Length: 113
Image (tube, rainbow, N blue to C red; front, side, top):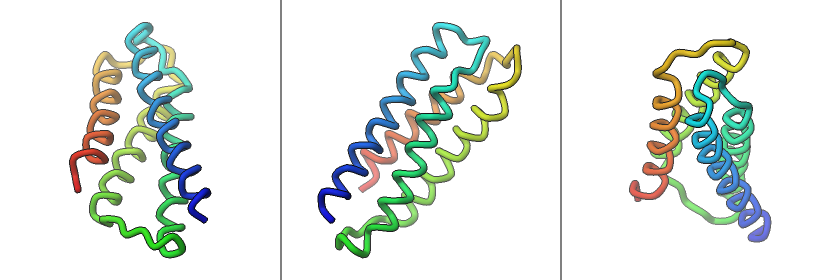
């Protein structure tokens, strides 16, 4: 069971890396929302929920308030990315907001103990 938890944490961190990569690509071409936002946020969401579901089996204890806020942030990233992926022209505020949400989520993960 410990291997599964480590695998999920690994995939969760890869999702975070995908979001950072999507942010860097977004600043390169800000007029189009790239699909990396959807893939990275989706991976973070799925692995985060799986880690929470495995918590009773692995004996891990998590701060539910922290994880609830992180869940809201990743759902906001997914919602914004999904809403603006199909549009040809996106607002100028979108890349900084998505980037800020990614940084907020990473900051919550690291600094909220």
